[in-house]
Length: 235
Picture 1: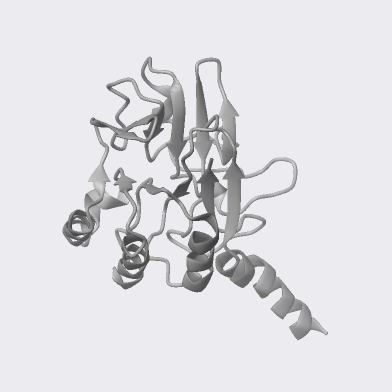
Picture 2: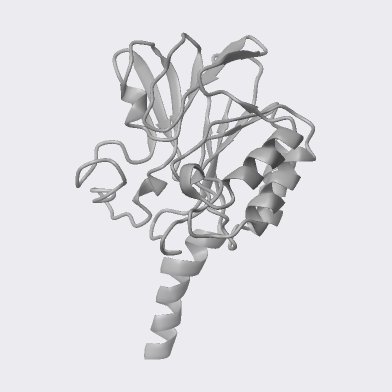
């Protein structure tokens, strides 16, 4: 009996949240005709179900990919990140990105930048571009928006609170706390105090919206509870 219970706990706490790739859809683009697939915090995740990711792409048919940083890990390898990039590159649609804190110190940061450049991905840090009717911009970790746009890519949701520009801010970094509990959510995410306000999901402030994904990977420990890995679809 006890071994069976132990295996169930292992499945619920470790394997299932890593292997079940959840899709969170937000219909908030006011019929602009775009479908964005948003992902963050890959951290060279060896447990990512790539076949599920490809099925999601096939079903959703995104018009662009928005990458919010930490595709690599400062202590990890690169093979799985490269596999993810190869899948994205095959779709032949625009790719926009900003860098996270792990891209600052990872030994694979130069390789990542070379591969992103080779696939034609555009870094939106401190620049603005158009995708259909929408203006996209972004900014680096611990920076802030410097120009007006409709959608901003950033890594840390706390950076989305800075500056004077309204709009929709997309962020990662929190991993949703990795381990979550009913009612209270999580008790810790990076760069916030305990029992943080900005964990995951959509936050509507008076002058801006902040949409936080819990990401598709982990750092430090491959541990999640009530918080599966996820990609976001914006319509």
